[in-house]
Length: 431
Ligand SMILES: *Cc1c(COP(=O)(O)O)cnc(C)c1O
Image 1 (cartoon, rainbow, N blue to C red):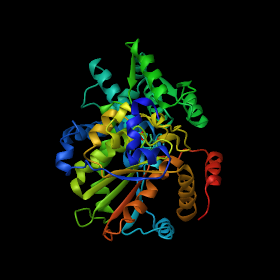
Image 2: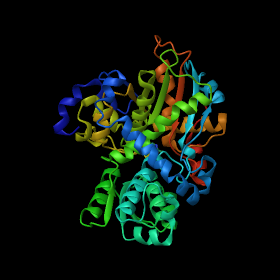
Image 3: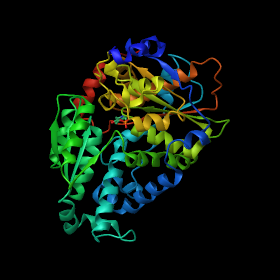
């Protein structure tokens, strides 16, 4: 542990994190939803504004990405029940209530939760540039932005971003489709196939030997000296956060269509894999706006990269990194390989989430194999982090969760090449 944080060693939670123990942390600072929401600094109107913008872009998305046409160009995913997986998990612990999966792993365009925030921020930028240049008004058919004239206009601008893979993939594909020059700074964890997919889209990929924080910093510097270059800031962006939050507002209708009630008597438990925090934070914010105190949100992280749990439990937020307590930030969950959480998200969510927990890489691999065997659903390792949550929550003997809905947020995986998927599955051990 570095000197600056030596006093933290007295905290039991920090000792456990430093020892790579799988832990469950109840957030002592959680407030009732109305009070917690007031501390975020963003409002329901902001999220509704984002939802309306995505609606305006829907015809363009449908035109450019055929796989989004079944929902009219709205980038949304299915919720499915996991009866066989639930049965298998119940051999390992208690799991009262019913288990469901939110398949952001199968979102159109980039096959991960980043198809929400990342794509949304590119659309915000494109709309603003085009409106300011007199090429577009809000009443227009947005498909006009795909015209050669507009593409040439966007081609004067660059977008830079730092990523562990999926954010770069989302921003790269969306940006390149509109004609932007996109430069993606990839951390060392980024998978080769993600880089190749971007190069196929004429995106410039800059590879770094270092982790996510360094890749982001390089992206920031690329943009700093170039007025035509916009940096998408995964550590601070409110725009990304709002793009994710739209998911929360859409969920009530989706659950109602499945006959799932959510209220105080039928609580909703949602388990969100957490990297820097924007994705899970934004979704949890939207869920709290939609369901208030009836929804309980948990962030899930690998034992090697518990940056959000560390930041929240110590109150240091982005002033502390997992390396500061001797962890290596090396994990098979490449989407979660983040050593330092977003300070904005940590503070915004401090009063809203119920808790955080960690799990080992081996456990991620085991859950991945179990889901494959029981439900024939294939995800990337990061996306399994949520699957441990129901067992943690139900292990509390005082919990009364027979009427609960457990929603595991599957954050990525449908675009993983088959060969790579087989390698992941080979790491899992049958129970
Ligand atoms: C990015 C990512 C996450 C977490 O999102 P953050 O905004 O980094 O917290 C979770 N799962 C996958 C697959 C991801 O790519």
